[in-house]
Image (cartoon, rainbow, N blue to C red):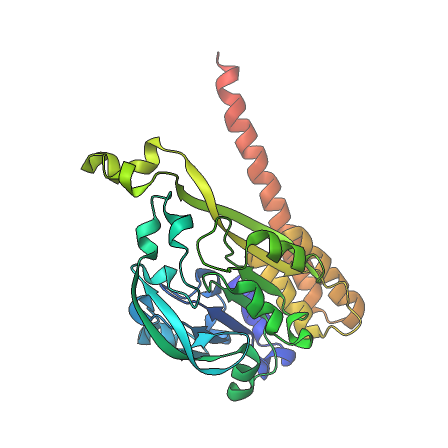
Length: 316
């Protein structure tokens, strides 16, 4: 796979137009799915709460270019926006936590506001202009409640050509006025995207009053005996490429690569075939071959699992 990635990234269409990856709310580590393509890519990483923004100098050197911005991302630029710093850096937001709605949940203390500060805010359009970039290939956001409005603020010429988009919308009420999962999915249904992955995460439904009545061991092992209810979602979209009249060879190459990184080898095969039909570049024949290889490997792994399950039956 390393050799194929290298062939794609050194294609003439990508040498001077490297992949542009945007990460909003980059608390913790830079996205692990990007590690295989980082050295070829430009990454714009935003996080206003830098208490857990771990993009080290070593990690910087692994990127073609890493732009770290300690700024809020909003729908329009502003000199001063309220930013609520919470007990957990991962819960900080421009939206105020909904204390009443959070009260019945075990994790509500993570949303306790420890400070409110004013920070400058930018938007995606302005950031691209300031950095001299005109496009986004992979968009990832975890803004704690404003993912949809940020995505909608991106000019359609750019957003409709994003190849992969990741969001982390809420399911329960955690922030006042937040963009919820149902609203995001309703909007994305009108755009050229399909869902490749959806992970549901959550917390335990128990108030702090009742939680305080448990002993230390019970509190530490709460998830082992108390059901976790859905609280938020990590959802990933891939561009359908249905509007292929204007798609460049560069976009087909990256669409194949991103699909493959997500394990979508059936869609990858489709992309490689369409790319070859349109551009006749032999690199797409190589990509088709790789997609077939990965599909075959998946089938063989399936047969292996079936045989392993059947073996005990043979000896009974």
